[in-house]
Image 1 (cartoon, one colour):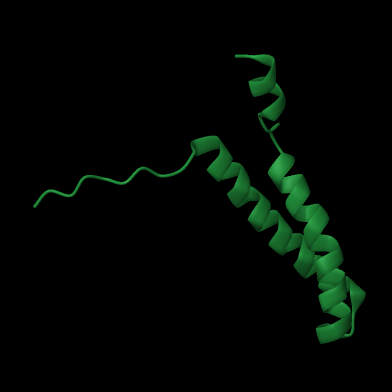
Image 2 (image 1 turned 30 degrees about the vertical axis):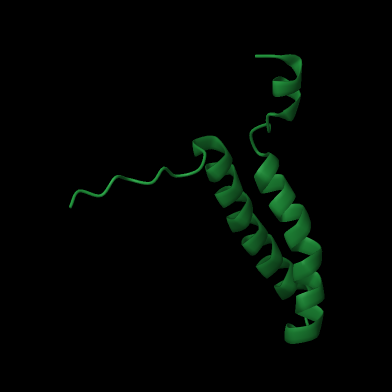
Length: 72
């Protein structure tokens, strides 16, 4: 593996951390607008960010799904 491949490879947990970091402020903003509570919005934002981050981690780890050949 070359140095550029190593530097471009994502570290484990990067997607989850990114999802949570983006989900928290968006959740707080949504909480103030829709729920009138920062705490509820923060919880929802962290949850959604965690789910999206886990999905990103899974897709980075396993790559894109390959199309199966259809037998006709």
